[in-house]
Length: 452
Image 1: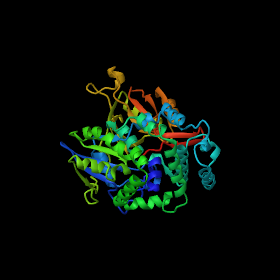
Image 2 (image 1 turned 90 degrees about the vertical axis):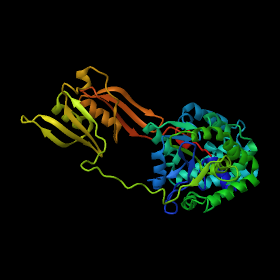
Image 3 (image 1 turned 45 degrees about the horizontal axis):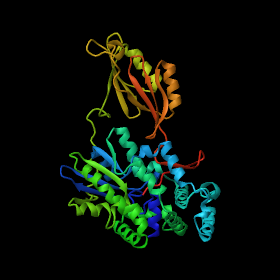
Image 4 (image 1 turned 120 degrees about the horizontal axis):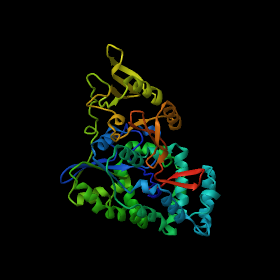
């Protein structure tokens, strides 16, 4: 019971989906039959190690089939500075942590902090007990290589933004902040005690959780939920049952869609007598676990003649000049070419990693934006390893910078450029997402926002 309580606080759910996929190829994934379409409910874990990539085919297939994705809350808003500051302000203890916990608990905390090599004065002393518990959990998991960027909610949130899929959420960001901001101090102390009790338990450290995740044991999660309801009714109501019931009206609206939807919530929200699975079944929904056999990916198809399925075509004023420009400016490699009897390019492929574009000289029917004096089409996105170096290279070759490089909340840094023929290019590179992060001792200490 204490284990589930602490995991709920940090969002590191004991029986969440993730980790090694040998035991369950469709971990904590359910199909829900709506009135007009079949939808998916996925149990999430918020921090995972890089070893969990690539994800099981079942999870990827559910995302691929979904027209829209719903999360617990708006992760982008929660990652904004004002939201982080609101959480920080809520965590502040005017008279210090020691004024809110017993002497015995504080002494245990000192030992626990030493074991983690955690600077207690900076990370816990100025804050309330619940924030200290969060800090200890995240310290332990980050030391073990667990990161928010590999967590299922952040991973699919970033994907959905990039893919342009509609995003919805079940509760407003302020509700998530208030979950902690308005937490009674006694309950916060209980969370801290739970964290200290499980510290050093081999079954409850990050590696132990990783082993547990392999099993995908819903029965065990149900048992933990019942124990939490019996022994910690206040925490159970605050973190699970009350929120689950508050989510149901929005959840049912999502399930009424005629297009496939994917709902991603912390796995503990799905278990127990007050879990989403039970609430949905009570409403008459047909809810079934996705079987390993049904979750297998469709066999990959191979195009008959090309490695790429989609090849954009650009029309240039001077085919040869443009062909040379794209190689010099963006690092494209020359591919198959056709030329006329004078040696002029009539058709040329340009390759960039696993992508291909086709370049042809403009004509009376197809002209470049510069010649046609029309607005440039939507930008072509090009992923690079070093954005600043890529911008400098393109600028030197003759590209125009339309928008300077800027960080984006969904986990990318990009810039917008225009080539000599008027086409727009978005150069982009991945960065750690801004969403869902707390800074305990800015700017040197960064944390993922704990969410149950």
